[in-house]
Every structure is written in structure tokens, then in C-alpha cells.
Amino acid sequence: MTWLAGIRIALRALRVNKLRSILTMLGIIIGVGAVITMIAIGAGAQAQVEEQIKALGTNLIIVTPGSVTAGGVRMGAGSRSSLTDDDAYALQRELSDVQAAAPALRGTGQVVYAGTNWSTQFFGVTPEYFEVRNWTIGAGKVFDPADITGAGKVVLLGETVAHALFGDGDPIGQTIRVRKVPMEVIGVLARKGQSLMGQDQDDVILMPITTARNRVIGGTQAKLRSVGSISVKIREGADMAHAQAEMRTLMRQRHRIPPDRDDDFTLRNLSEVLGAREESTRIMTLLLAAVASVSLLVGGIGIMNIMLVSVTERTREIGLRMAVGARGKDILSQFLVEAVTLALVGGLCGVLLGVSGSYAIGHFAGWRTDLNIQAIILAVGFAGAVGIFFGFYPARKASRLLPIEALRYE
Image (cartoon, rainbow, N blue to C red; front, top):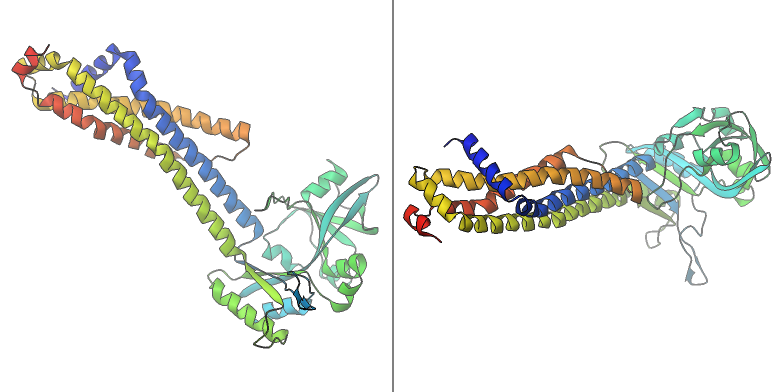
């Protein structure tokens, strides 16, 4: 008997008991659908983390002011203004692993345009900030060197601020007031989306650091030339740990910190934090897929159970086939084809369930899902393997029946 004839006989046998065949496939359908959906959810979460990493900046180390001790009480990080513009310039000039260093000064305030106002945060930055943070301009232009040296009254708006103040209008060339200081809008930043902490990165205004220090914030910040943070981009391929150690050594030398004293600054290697987040997301994806795969195993056990029942019910048919010349391998292939057919048809139905489930979750729950063709092929292939594995024993049992005993079976 050829494989084609075996497939026809197997399909005919499955059509005789349609309801039982459908119920048997149900476990495989749910299992494949669950695997595809869980992998899609995990892949979507991982892709979202990767986008956030790319938006934040790669190979990034953030230097922030450290704590200060007053009256025996240790204040929190940032309680002392210990960073200056010169620290940023020194990091970029003296360390070969540093590609760019961007000082920044942060503040919050009310922004007014005509009869509209919006409360947001603003950053005083240098041109290096755009390179370090991988931020591009959606429209308009960036600051000129003259804007930095002359504390020019110009700003770049984040997408959220631009929409809040101007709606669908063009903000470029318009004048807004930041803390009552008139500023000309020269550009709109490209969209960044939410940060890893869920904050809207587009709800921001960027201006020259000298403008923020001298015209908007003023006071102590202008006198000491202090900055709120320094974002440092490490060159591609450089050892982040080595670069971080060199940065700490240079900063301690510049700040004249004795060996027995703590740093007056803090270094945060965001690549390690984001890498750990990405790894945890990947592990969660694998865990979800593993949990969903249990349904496939349950479906395989259901196939084995039904096939054993089918062998028992069709014992006389098996004996009759053997009596007219069918060999053991013919009987084996027939029942094995039935089991694999149940698994593969169930797998294909599971693909439809998984794809529709992924789209439904993405639409109604608002989660990002990324369908992966490799995951679909893997799920269907695994379903076929389940059919072979759990269908082999019943098929082997049927092929080893003795024709005489089979014909006598009641």
C-alpha cells in the first residue's frame, strides 16, 4: 500500500467520526494558538524595549550630582551641585573611549503661546546632546554655535508640547514664553514616545544651556556654571566597564576627592540596566511559550488516547486487512497518518486562532504584538512532532495484532 493510499484511508476513517476527531484536535488547536499568541506578545514587548533603548541612546553613561552630608545626615543624590560644563568637556577631551559628552540643565515651568499654556519640563543642552541621546529634528533646525555663546532665545519643542500649544498649526517661527521669557521656536523634535519608566519623552522643550542658565533659571546656577547631569556616549566596541572606571578616576581627580572620601557624583551605566531589562523580557517570552506548550502535550495525550480507542474499535477491520494481504507496516502507516493528520489539521486551525488572538489582544488590550513566521512554523512543526510521538505507540500496537486473534475479537 502506498503512502497516498494510506492517507486516503486515514482521512476516510477520520471523517466517519467527525465530532470525535474535532474534540481530539481541540487540544492541539488551543496549544498552537496559545504558543503563537504568547510568542507574539513576548516579541512585541521585546521590540518595544529595543525601541526604548534606541530612543534613549546606546552605550550611555549618565553622570549626576552626588549626595552631601550635613550635620551627620547624608542627603539624597543630587543634593549638591557638583558638576560643571568643564567636567563634560574634560571627559570628552581626555578619555579616548568617550565619543561625546553632553551637559544638561533641567527645569520646569509654564509655557505660554497666545491664549494657550502648558506646564512642561525644559532642558538647557549643547549640540552634543542630540548625538548622545540619538535625537533628531522632525522639522526646523538645531541651535547655531552663536546661540550657545550668545545665550540665544531659541527653543526646540517636543511633539507633545507643539501639539498642546499649536494644535495642527506650524510652530516654527512663532514666539512662546517660557517662565515669562520670550523664545522663538526654531524646530520640532522627532517623536520619541514613552521612556522605560512610562514618561512621555516628547513633553519637553530644549534650549541652549547658556540660555537656560542665564535667562530662565539664573541665580546660583548661572554663577557656578553647574549642570544637572552629563550624558556620556561611549564609542562603539569600547569596554563599558573600563570606560566607566576611567570616568570615575578622572572625575575624582578633577573634584580633588581624597581616597578615603566617597564620590560627590554618581555614574549610571544605562546599557547594563537596559540590557537586563531586555534579557528579562526575552526570558519571559520563553517562559510564556513554555507554559503554552503544555497545551500541546495535553493535546498529544488526547491523540494517543483516541487512537488507542480507535485501535480497539477497529480490531476486526485490522484483522480483515491483514487477512487479505496488508502488512504490519501498512497498518502502522495508516494509524500513524491518522495521528499526524489530526495534529497537523489541528495545528493549522491553531495558527488561525493564534493570529486572530494576537490581533485581538493588540487591538483591545493595547499591547504590542509582533507575529513571527518562524514561531508559526515552529508551532506547526511541533504539532506534527506531537502527532508522530503520541501516535506511534497506538499505530505500533495495531500493526502487531495477529490476524486470527483480530478476526475473533468481539
